Structure formats: structure tokens, C-alpha cells
Amino acid sequence: MTLPSLTKDFSTDVAIIGAGPVGLFSVFECGQLQMKCTVIDSLDVQGGQCATLYPEKPIYDIPGFPMLSAQELIERLQAQAAPFAPRYLMGQQVESLTQYGTGWRLMTSAGVEVTARVVLVAAGVGAFGPNRPPLPGIEEYEGKSLLYYVKKREDFRGKRVMIAGGGDSAVDWALNLVDIAARVILVHRRPKFRAAPASLAQLETLATEGKIDLIVPYQLAELEGNNGMIESVVVEDLDRSRKKLACDSVLAFFGLSMKLGPILQWGLNLSNNHISVTQSNCSTNLQGIFAIGDIAHYKGKLKLILSGFAEAASAAHAAREYAFPNAPLHFEYSTSMGKPGE
Image (cartoon, rainbow, N blue to C red):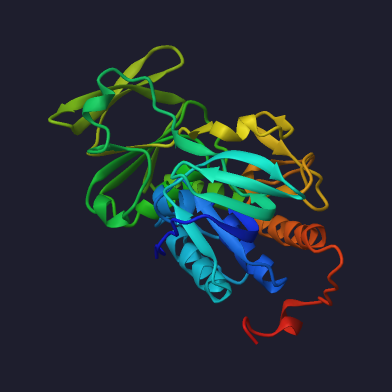
């Protein structure tokens, strides 16, 4: 669901930079505290990576949902935020952030000026794109038979699929394509994978049963095919020994390149391209600005969606105290607040 963006200048209680899962949940948390939100994102659609990179990827660690797809999660978060009537400014980047009294003025790439009492930065990894393997002639196959994310599982029905990578995305998609693909081949440059223990146990079982081919320790070396369609892939081990594997599609999961863009110029304390925050309330070194989700950094940080949800709640309460220091709020539980609008 994409809501229309406003194109005029206006004021808001909370400006949320980023419309990914954590940004969307922040609308609910701020709404519960009677604060109006404006959400700004450079993408044309809400949902961040979940919507644009892997809408059908299964997610297992959302409390109360044993499994739901990334797109289903976004749709539920949109519905949860909707009663609080947030403004969405989609397809525009926040280019400047300057102090405005005790609040902040944001200027977007579309020329829209937003003044806000507080700012929540929920920008995920910033502007993102896939890390591309250094293969000769790769451009011929990209977007056709070599892909960096999965939008529809059905696209791989009956195909021989090679998955390259050793993290959660590679392992999760190997497990979730095994029932529809003609063959699943998982290639990684080392025997050890970086994924959830339960997923690794399932992977080992399927490999033992011969339902998934584990090709380790190998890495992609050369693509072979015609007119953008892969017919086989040459893989190479650490001793430069090579072998050829027949396949129809390659999914390359080597992580994302991360670019913070204008955020680098806002005077925030940064640590390895992340914003340093106080763990208890996600406040930054600039008063009235909070950072939550993957972009936030503190000791012991877990990069999980559910961690971002908890950070959104903590930041929302701290934000309201900063924005309305003299306004009492008696808040105990979400159930005590009643339904939105009551």
C-alpha cells in the first residue's frame, strides 16, 4: 500500500526518516503518545528492504507470528499505523537537517520543508544496493538469470537454482526454495555458515537427504550462458581447482553496500557508518534527535527487527518528554490507552 505524498511545507510533532518496519512501527508508538508523525523515505514505496528486496522472504522472529512474509509484516505495520493518520513523503530524501528553535527543520530533495519538534532517524542501512561478485561479463546476466533478491518464489519453480553466500539470506532461501525448485545448490567459500542454529540444523538435514547440494569451500568464478540466461557456473576452491555446475538461475547474497548520504553532514556522532546512541532511550548527541533500528549503534546492539521495535518504543517516550516537557501523560500499557481516536 502506497499512500499519496504531500507536496507543501508544514509542521509536525515527529519527523521519522525511513519508512521501513521500524519507522512504520514508530508511527504507532508516537500515536499512542498523542504525537502526529510525518514519515520521509527516498524509496517510492513503504517497507524499506522488506518491500523492495525480499517481499516473500519468511520472517520467523516476530512475537506472536511463527512465520510471516516480509510483505505481510509491512502490510500489518501499515494497518497498525493508519489510525494515527501519518503523513508520508515518499520518493524524496532528507537533504538537510538544521536546528529550528528547540526543534528541527528538514528540507527534502523534492523541495518540501518540514519543521518538527523531534526527529527519529530510522534509516536502516541508509541508501542500499547489493554487493556484486567480481565476475567477468556479469552485466549480461544481472536482472535476468542472476539476481540479488527474490520477489516471487514461483519464478524459480522447476528451475535449477544456485545460491551463493553464507549468511541468513542464503541459507533461508535455500530452505524455502527446496520444495519448488528442481534443484538447489548452495555455494559458499567456507564450510561454516553464518545463520540461525535452527536453520543450519535444517540445512544439514536436507543436505544429508540429498535435497540440497552443498558446494563448499567454493566461490563463483565464471558464468556461462547465452542472451542473459545462465546455463552453467564455474566454481573455484581455495586451491584454484575448478568445476562446472549446470544451473538456470543464480541468487547472489553477499550483503548490501551502505551509503549514509546526507546523514554524514548533520553533525551526529558516527561509529562505522552507524549513529551512536544512548541505549536507554536511543538519543543522539543532538538534542531532539533519536536513532533507532539498524542505523543505531550501542554496546551489545542486536540487529533484529524486534530490537528496532523496542527501540522505537523507548525513543517515542523520550521524544514526547522532550517535545512536550510540561504536558502530563499517564501511560501504563497500550491496552489502557484505548483504540486510536477514542
